[in-house]
Image (cartoon, rainbow, N blue to C red; front, side, top):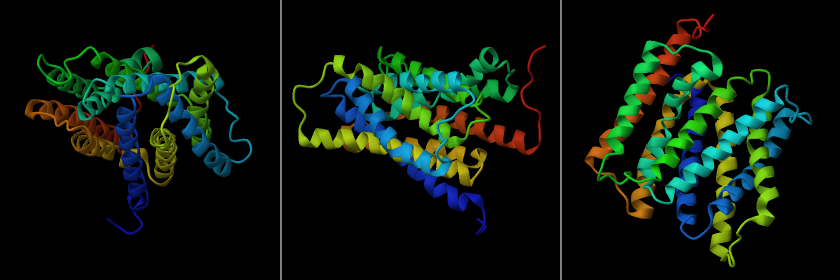
Length: 299
């Protein structure tokens, strides 16, 4: 790797962001055994808001909150709230590694939804990648497996919501990354804080639980801040394939913290999902490098 290669500066930040997100998921799974889903999701967004707002202000200036696409920003951020709540809710019942693998189907769902949402026709390679990803989930969600559970539907819904989140992000070309980062935290924090007085608050929170809830928000904020920093230093096409290294962290946390390790067939399903995702990212990077046109719009 050449000394001035963008990955040299961006990759450490990107990998650390992935570790933050995997640690966030493991922390949420640990907390949700004794606390309500609402409190955990609120803590995640409130902490992210406290961390990312100063970052957005410092890098974007006093007008960092101004957007040309307010409605899209609000709907996009709401999709992220739904994805977070569904994912954490599913983790209450499912192993961390398998649940994370299913959540990585979001890019495949984005392909399926690109036609109705953006009017784009997916390429043959994109369709093949999506089909492979769905085959992987069928291997994972088989009778007798650890994820043959109704809660799997929540993880799938999280992946679909995340797909809408990704597609709507592409409709914000005139907003800076700092503005988008701010709204990602603002919507969840505002909605959940408004409902907080009506929520079923825990009767008692220990000092350790309180510290863990604070860490939940800090991990979310730090992860998103590092992610933005990585994307500012290198093209997304270069760093995106490394997203799937999060499966290593998820598997390690699942075994070390919860004593859960996927069996051989589940590992196969996870490998199929990860391979299809990496192939999709590599295909998109090569297509852009060749200067191929964007997916055609009908009519």
